[in-house]
Length: 432
Image 1: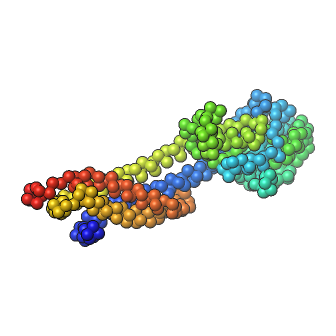
Image 2 (image 1 turned 90 degrees about the horizontal axis):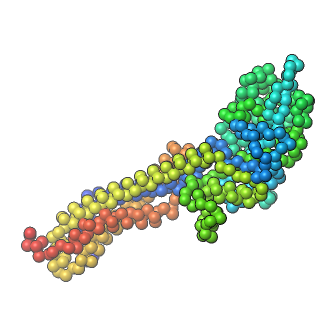
Image 3 (image 1 turned 60 degrees about the vertical axis):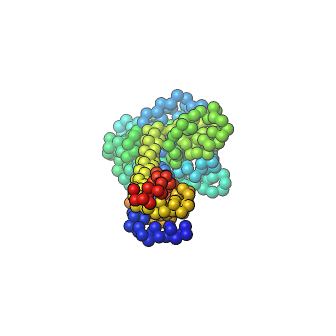
């Protein structure tokens, strides 16, 4: 009898049932699409933000007071502490090693460039670095990194130097101020008052625009700068690009004041502070600082995008619940006589509620299944248009979406069902 009553309800009022199912389907479509995108938006946006450049800088902790202008170190070569190039492979052994997308060492060396017509040599800064370099990892693998990974926004005309070659790339302003030396394919010669590279000829392979003080410098392979400066296997600072999540209250706490549970949760979350902490563990004696203008911008945008997705999801679910409530209220009023007869022949309030609730649960399951399918397609299309690659379907969301649909259907029907349970059969049967 229970099944028959539910079946007859669908047969007699198909349009109203379709309207409720459609409302649930639309709500679940939006929920599926936003949840699917939200699960990938953080990583996808973080990877997009990596085109802004590195977000961490590593320097020796025991270094002397830096004289750093626009990213170029103007201290004498013999002053300050250095880091060991051989230790860089340890960065890919930390807990969040897969979030380390790249790192690039820098070594600044003061130099002078000879002028062909015999005038006074031109003072310049050689910046030794990598463009694309393979680093040996302690686990036996290799990792390719360099400026290509950490500074992708730098624009170059020509090409970057080859590893180990006597080649260089000129900063854009240096090239503009010294056109006689700036042609790609030309040769520069270091003057006698250079540190120890007097007479070394460097072929110009490209001209790079960095947007900072690097435009006034000359970029050379790191091994060459190490040889000229007399610091083989060492460098002065390291720029690192890491995928991180936005800061929250936990990430702002001092790790030493955290409880063991908080410390474990912080350590196992890709906050910029926890990744910095792990880098210090891998490279003892270093100071790791976030490049705040990059990290803070990323955090604000990621937080706002996530908040927007959750607001859209909540609005869709509220709209679906209101639509279900409206259709349920109308259905209950239309079936007052039926409810009165059921109560008159002995049906309890619980039976009446379960008859209406079973209808809503069936609609919720159908709406959830269809909404999940349509929402997955919508997320796929949205991901392809916004991020350049389709969003990955998430089967794990199917039971979650159906659960949300059931919850919305129940909450939307609570008031109408409560009203149906309190109908008095006597006035109904008298036609009042």
